[in-house]
Length: 279
Ligand code: AMP
Image (cartoon, rainbow, N blue to C red; front, top):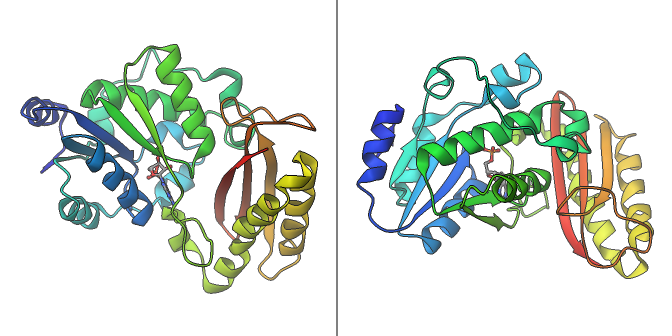
């Protein structure tokens, strides 16, 4: 069932007995989203999916306007996956008036991806907090694909005691390694070939784990540098080895979990990817 208004959501939600798993999305659903929905379905009595392109988390107006919107196809995927409620509100449903109170994600929201996209994590955390309040889920499912988002959401839930269990789902990739993303549809064939350097760099880094943190970065960096000379070129934004909980860069000689995260632009499209590693 698809609902748009908060009142219709509340009515439909009230009729769901048992546990509810929530999958927040911005639509243009692909097999990565489908994987989240499947995990959610195995872990709760009902699944609620939201489809909302949140203006608050976009820096550039052009990026917001260009974001793909495919609600009919999204609803069909959700139907096929047995989703109980697709919640697709309008901007004015979610933001009937300018917010006076919103979420600040602090330092965590300003580093790495947050440095490249000022305000992004505050906007994302604010809408997730609002959506949690609207949907009232027991659990919520997020992709490892957006590793810093996952870290910020975990802190949001802990720091504000939101009482939602956060579950991380491994990144779904194309057979050649490219992480699925709603933005991949913007890539030309040549741009897509160049974009494969992101996952190649991550895999090269993973292979170097026995050599330690520095070895991982030293193995991944040249893959990006080479792609920077390709046609069309890759324009790397960052390559970091970060603490998965805080996203602070790890120290040399680091032991324990870390996430190797990369962001780059190919043509007009900005892509991110990461791999969780264990040292
Ligand atoms: P988005 O619609 O891009 O905001 O993504 C909605 C959710 O799907 C987020 O939790 C993402 O991390 C997750 N997601 C996006 N791409 C993938 C992927 N390739 N594999 C797994 N999860 C993903």
